[in-house]
Image: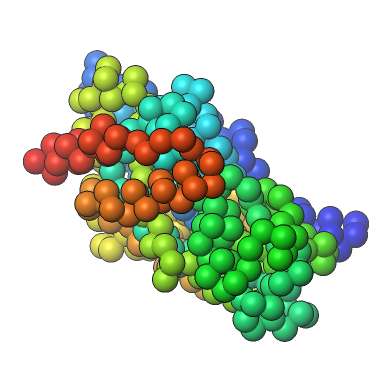
Length: 326
């Protein structure tokens, strides 16, 4: 087995085959509602993974089918195709999903700006973003992080398309590519960055938090909103219960999420994992993000990704979270 094959095996997460029949016998059998939950297998999706394993959905009369994918923009596409009812992703992906498929934000689950990072090959000794000029950068084109890199972060440092070589790649393959030296840097999300650093493959260059706090939305399909609003409220009640564990029962959270990565054969020390998870701030709610989302939409329009700005009064629905809290 070659070095690249070993790294590929260690650093690739299986995104499929994670369907679950449910969370056990519900308390009120007659009231059970099954939801199709999309989530990404990077650290952004792990609060949602914890929710599904915590028992809180069961407590609120819900069962779940899991749809795991490498990144949130794929969940968004599944929702546009009406294959999934609910899913998380950052602002740019949500905007695209709203324009293409009328997707509706029902909550902001977390902020993840510190988890989105540029990691460079350690042997290159890169210490400044400007040194990426002419370099090969692995990027999952179409993802929110990928859009931020090209549209906001690199231009801030004077790097525009053509000043570097963008290598389109799934996030789950980037660490192996970095190890094989087929790319010079990767823009990725946790836990891939901390693992590359811990394994002596990469060096941490920067995170995106000063450019974009990256609120992660929980979105629902229009069908879900129209036909099952009561289910959405129950679902958000479960989220509020689960969020409490991130502060009052952190060991349970850590053990549950760590077990997910261990089950995939992923070698990661508890310390490395804790570093990755600490960069996710879980706080379900619905802050006023209209100005932020307007800015994100205008960037997408300037890049001809979308043609019009969403109607925020329809796209952003804080009323469901208000009912859940009430």
